Length: 410
Length: 225
Image (cartoon, rainbow over all chains, first blue to last red; front, side, top):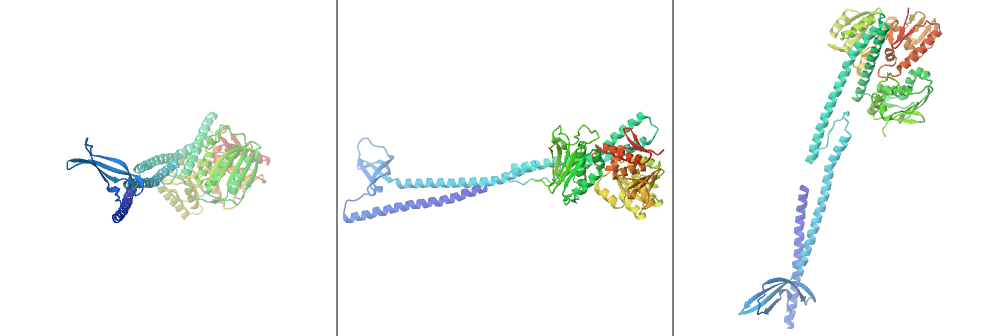
């Protein structure tokens, strides 16, 4: 607003000076003409030649009788002897009575100079208007880009908004009231959503923690009950089933607490972890099962690689991947582990998935064949990967399930 | 072994006392920090089982206090909080084990036995159960004085059985003891089955009596008649 006012002001001043110059030029031109005609008059007076008439001062007086023409203005062409061509003149005709005679008097004024002046003024004005418009467009575009920048920044931030993120959500200040209002509303909305979400999360976490103690009591009581030998087989079975169920609940609860902790980034300390050492260690502890299933293990690992991670989470990640690869393996199948600087690939034999691979990482997705499975293993894997910015992906190649963890996002 | 149990949940405390007492341990239970401090001042214990969150204090402070008096005393932490910091802090100030609630009594027992071995025999202890002899520090096992070669897990399994002899050991308890928390234990039962099958085969081959009984649908029992 201030800028456009400024442009107008500049334009007006410029217009004044340019107009001034044009008028001066015009007057100069006319003065020059007067000089020429005056010189000619002097020459004529001295040479007593036929007196030339200055057309600009031309007056034609014609006696008239009847009827009386009205007083009127009109355009007319007159021959200019100086330039030897017809020129446009404005004339005024009127009737004057002199000594009882009516005379029709015509006075002329050349239009050419004024015409030229008008054309120049029009051109000048147009130039000025164009200039102002162009300046305004440029200024506008620039300032609107500035304003939209805030708007687009807002859109990007909303698009990337993650209720789980621990960064503070803030938006840029805008000069446009509407945008500023929008941003304010959005910030207060996200804050409300976030606080609701955190409350809910806290509630779930507290509930999970509070469940631990009663579960411990239930489990211990049942364990004691199982030790007492004086139960009938049917009762035994009942207690055993109940015990199994409460155990399942305990495991589920522990795992959910772990997931919540990963989400809350409660594993901040990280140090260089050597995955190959951990993998070898895990394979060792699982060797009995590998033998039992007659699985052929091939490893291609760069032993020098370290990844900055929380050692505890690194172990959980690797254990879950390896166990997953063993569980879904076939008897006499293969387990291939490749570790490079960029990625870890764990592949195992097995029939193709009967469902969309994307739901692999969903919580509580289990292949119905193993009822003891909680279906949380891979979602733990995904959570840990997300936390460290790793990319985990699944593919099926050469009748092998391949789990790939890329350590650094491309 | 004289054991002090510091746990504010009485039913849980009772369960522990009952389970451990059957093995002939002297168990005493207190339900708050204040009483625990008092008991520690008055009596000598071999081992203390302590909950971190007590109504009037922190179990970790209790451990610091105990460690000032006796270095050899065994300490097992039980906590509903499974935070790594707590775990590390607990182990750093001298706890032997950290169990997260809910835990298995059999697991607690196994840890207590290992503490018992540490404090009663020092370095050169061995466990003798009829024809079986175990040397825990060297991870060696003998049947009729013939060494049997066990994998690490098989060895741990045998030790766990012997620690909880004549008790019903649930599969879940075994799985958690062998592989810890947080594993998706889906096929751990298969793992256990495999391990037990191998262990039993190895024992029988050397002429050991078949002590490991399967309890259908529930688990196993190391039965010494």
